[in-house]
Length: 365
Image (cartoon, rainbow, N blue to C red; front, side, top):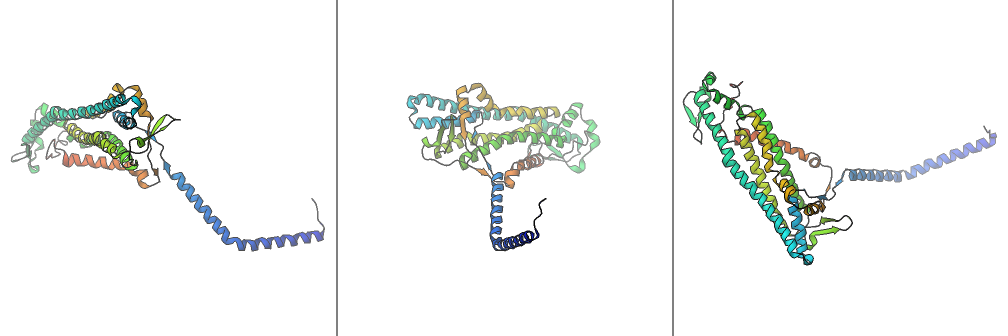
């Protein structure tokens, strides 16, 4: 340890006191500038947090199904035809025609199956259920009876006689006690599962409609719709002409949206009319094949080169998602939509058994 002389020690102490006074005075003078510095720092921190929360979407390829190849062919072939097609006019036109015909054939087949399904399957199941429930009211209720719009009997609540249940035949008891409406909770869960199955396809349609019609800018020529990335060998969508937007809407989105909505209603109707608890669940799974026809045809028919071009077609979202309640929680609103639909259908919309009295569950215990 080095000891300084007393004089040197007093001099050092004086110098330290003077430096402290100078720093104190300087801090008094620079206090406003430091406050400004802290304010700027806080602003930069908030901007950094905001940037971290913002989600920038990368361009995504189209779905690998019949609609994906249809959109790819429409955009790529229309653009190449507008550019002269470099001597391959017939080739480009033939592929555009083939994919369009295949897409239309898929839509026509779905419509045909829906019509025949309603006429041959659903109508018979609904009729048998109505006849059985009419017989049930004829035995379980004392006269007089009311009549539904379809001409079937409905007893009045005050005339209900549970003890008459033993007068029904074993076949009638088995059919009525297997009626899905006799177990509303079970039926509601199955209807919700089926509705969610269709909602998953509906969300894809609504997303593509927003992407192509709202986020994608409008261009004046077919040539300006796509830009090729030579490094990645991909095609990126830059914009759509008004005519292409109309073709996409009427050829792809509107028929697909309509089929999905009809399928929700028709599927629920068939499930309510199914006279077996086991078959209700199996039928809900079987109905999905109408939704996957587009995937079946894509896998079985579309050439491998066309599949590669579909993968290489990138669609930019042209949007940055900021953290909002809708962005974080908007998708969960579909749960409320589905539950409301199931509730409304079972209690008010279903016409399998009009004016259903909810009078089977207790007697079948």
